[in-house]
Image 1: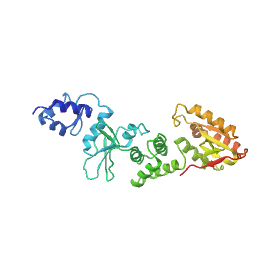
Image 2: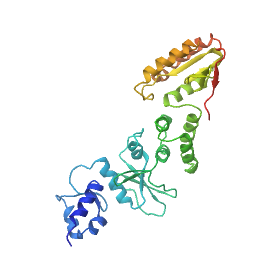
Image 3: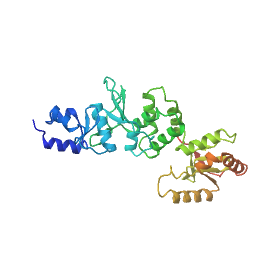
Image 4: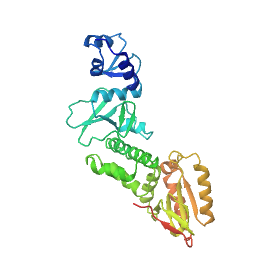
Length: 314
């Protein structure tokens, strides 16, 4: 039987030059012909058991992900850091590709593929040719369950929520449906986000303030004066009309943020509100100085008449 060139070309295009042995045999390759292709010095390269690259070069990220799914079998779907990177979200540095498979499937992890058997196998929510990815909320949940550093978990959760890839409710649903073991950090960080902490820098600042002995602010409220929403400061002391903003270029993603910040500060100061700007670096390296500046400011100031403070919804 002679391989069908049209089928070969289609697989080469749709699967980015990656093919399984079952597919190769189905389109006309003989077992001997297939072995001849991936022999030492041959034109193909073995990537995984029964999965081959139809060339000898270094495989791309997409080719490795395609190979991972071909190895894992039907209904398999990519999750974890690889899925996060597909959605252009924060992800831990790893060369492993995490793949979900049905709980009944006996398929071991191999080489660069980490197999996860699950009773909660989701449908693919995004596709890139032959590559299938879970939804962003599931990718976040599966990724952070394997992390032990709060800052990493904060960065991933904040990235997904802030970029609008998923909602707090969606992450909470994944947390509730997922395993309890290993979920403590995820649960804690998600509570921070629901409490109005929108970025890792703001979460670090909240930790600093809560352990300082200073009067506690309201985080991320809406400030409304004469029916107009003035701003939503990172931290707000209404009795002293004091706002603190965490200036993190990394987390304020819009190119127009600087101009927007200047306009917002102008509105606040015109209303009699004082604004202190703090950088994430100052929170980390100069916490005493940050607290001292805020403490000094809290000794003065009075409420703004008619100003309404609306706390963030939980």
